[in-house]
Image (cartoon, rainbow over all chains, first blue to last red):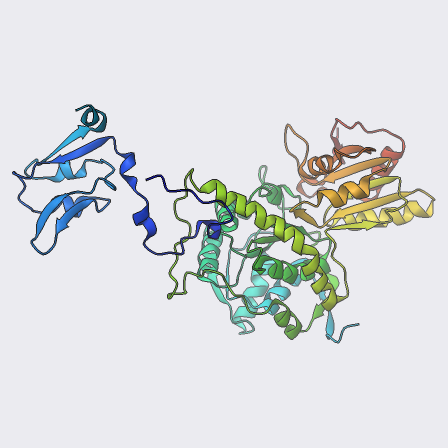
Length: 101
Length: 393
């Protein structure tokens, strides 16, 4: 996560991003305070969570049309998935408590 | 010295700016008219309507939109210009900072006018001084000729690959903008060859090299980008004399960052900018005829500020009055503050007096300027007390 930060002489001017798609390098999972814990058993693979997730953190197996989990490197813990899930498959658990567990 | 053909035209400061814009023929002009800048947009619109420029003219609904459109256009890679005054510049304020931070070489004539309120349409520098920390280069013109010459100086400096910063070309509202003077105008080709073709570094329209501009920049990199910006302004400072020298080769006129008049042997000096310098020169001539050793230091380049040049010049002077055409309420005015900063480390610091004049277009008469020199000579001013020149008690 903690990549070495570059000095002002090493970076493009004005904050211009000259390399497309590098938002992937920005792992936003560290922002999360609550983690969506997914119950695989009750999931009906409707993809509501996938379509609503603002950070494309819901991972799916496209070939088999199955939801496979949450990418915690990017999930910011906003809880939209838990809100929209018709089967209430997500439980938002506090990261601190999860660590203690 | 030069084979460049010159025409003498009678132009106002506004017309001189518009004429330079016609010759530069920028890709995009997005502007909104405001007194006293209106004539620039009017004259340029006429050039546009008559097919004398290839510019895309964007008629916007406000100055905030004007600068926003300019930022879009310059980001796309187009050579971009606008013009404004007073409230217009104030309305642009947030976009003015963005233009500089995104390193977009926009050139903008600013026809200096007092900020409201109470509402006033006449000259002072409160509009441009409110933008002095925006990251723009600020050049001040004394007369229409300087306005004209500064325009392509500004374009060249702004677009220099080591600079990439926007420039304000300031002139005094009405005094310069509506005063007709004889202006030496270069032939079109000379200006076009001088500014050349603009080669943007990372234009948005270069589809083979897609970029994102203005993305979120937090505590991990924002500071580094500000450090880069400081360096770019520093490089602009280093390149100013070179670019000004290149303009001199075309025009035969000189554009030092700081200009002096009857200065070397002068004991008492006025420091000021813009049209006030012209009146001061006139007063100096009459005082010199009476044997008084008085002189002038005129600042052309205000941002970046030429500290060392100025401290070198003011060293050993007996008295210096700094005439500011703007006020910073509860503090000293911008030019005075910079002059004080320049002189702090001098062994022999002159007495430097803060004088505020000409707010809202109050006339700066030769008599008032003479009273400043008399005050300096008679030791009548206090260094820690602002003298309000020409205000009624």
